[in-house]
Length: 328
Ligand code: 6CS
Image 1 (cartoon, rainbow, N blue to C red):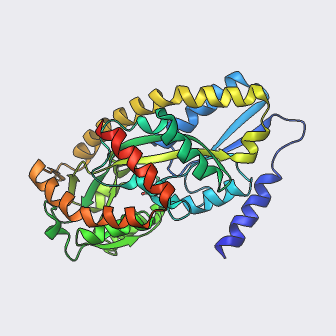
Image 2: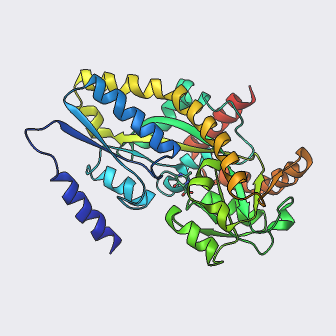
Image 3: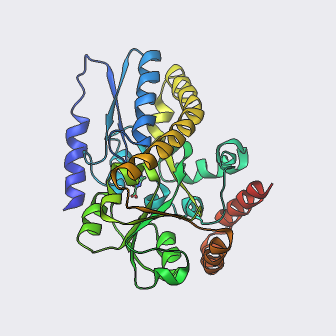
């Protein structure tokens, strides 16, 4: 049923451009208007339209074209030209992107993912094999747990139904912490918490505010275990067929967006923590100590090793390169 909906949507979208009007580039994001991804897509639209008068960029916020998986499918079919594809979901299709979901690996030095030519080249190749052109990898801020009971140790997760995105590595992580990991699409998380189908979830602060997850949870736990990474993508054949001028504009805009989005996510996350505190003064903020983080790191060790074993040679090499680069 879902597949037919995607086909129908793809058919409608491909018939929507007027032959005499500007070319429309459709950009689907996995978040709502006002989010970090929306800020990225709106800035992309502003810069591209200013430099390419023959192009109009139309941004589709989450909910207008379906779930993350459906957006990826639409891009693959050529019904949309640009999209955000978060490894938290994309990991089912490109398992190596789950490296970006690993706990206790990245801190502030994640820019190496775009800047190191070998690392970035490996990701480019993995995306291209699936028909995508990777434009950028960026962080939307630290992942934060929102729960109905306090969490300071892995034992506190026991019996907790905890929502994660749908990539298998995330499920393995929260199972290792002792929770009952429950994958579901972003759009179902609020009602899941409200109806007690789940007892907690994990996302950056800006998302917790704009999706109102704080309304239906009581604790905000900052473990600083992982940033939320997403990737901006386009279709490989769409990109390859662009004129030299258009390709150069896309490339330069993507480059300019790197510092812009980093500043934006920092600002959004800081401000929205204040908003949550104002709207719900009873919310309790827990920041894990180094010792408490150590217990989670220990529980995570077998997950990392199992993941490493499951990666092919290429993926394992990429992981080792990143580990080395982050250490350095
Ligand atoms: O939790 C999720 O599924 C989503 N979270 C964010 C912050 N962005 C997109 C993703 O799908």
